[in-house]
Length: 192
Image: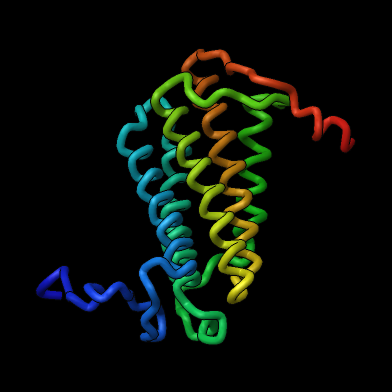
């Protein structure tokens, strides 16, 4: 590519997988924009993460970034053409994410409370990424009403926000910061 700019978007449209053009504020583009923002936040997290946070945490974040690139490619592809998209997610991605959540939760201990985001810069960045992830999930559900999104994508993004939350808790624990509790999860406790 000799130039980064194409001028094809000057009329308010952008191309999606398969060559079709859609409005720049199309829900498919909104969903992918939120996913792209999430990926950028994770890149920021990785760039400011202190070495003592651990190589394992960085490896998880790098894997998330790679998976998000595949997710964005799948979201950019209309469902009728998705099988021809070479960018696929691992079959066991949701289960692997759940296993990472369970492992980190075992280290951090259970939390039956809503927590105030913050503590350390890294924990705060992880909480921002979690919030952006939740927005991406909402946009994916809106897109899903217009054109089916793979169930594995929606499930992965849902679990990913939980993983980012637990990572923030681990960072607070590693740094010796006490979690700032707001209120107990009464609705979850009543459901048991």
